[in-house]
Length: 106
Image 1 (cartoon, rainbow, N blue to C red):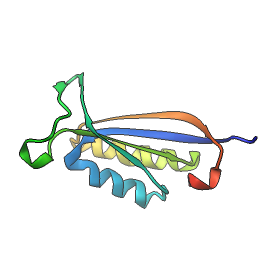
Image 2: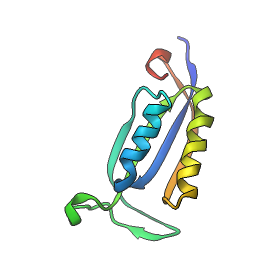
Image 3: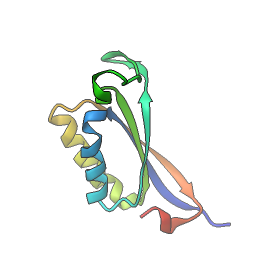
Image 4: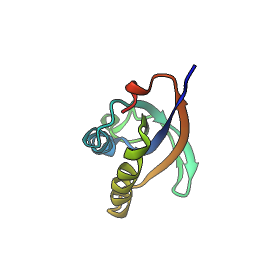
């Protein structure tokens, strides 16, 4: 069995900005992503409830997770950093992962 090195990028962001993050990933050539809704937690900005039933469901946080080739990671992180610099609040982390099927994670 052979494993292939990749990078797992996780972005926790307000649902309002999720389309911007998805477009950024797509433009960078990422082949897919997973969105986890109703993310709750407490951090620098206080407690955030994941229940977005009010306000038409546009408030609250989502987590967007993607696995991609190592060479794309720096490009994606640079663009996410620019979004943060523009005032969009998000949490970004990267984890080294290994996958069985390298062609699924461009």
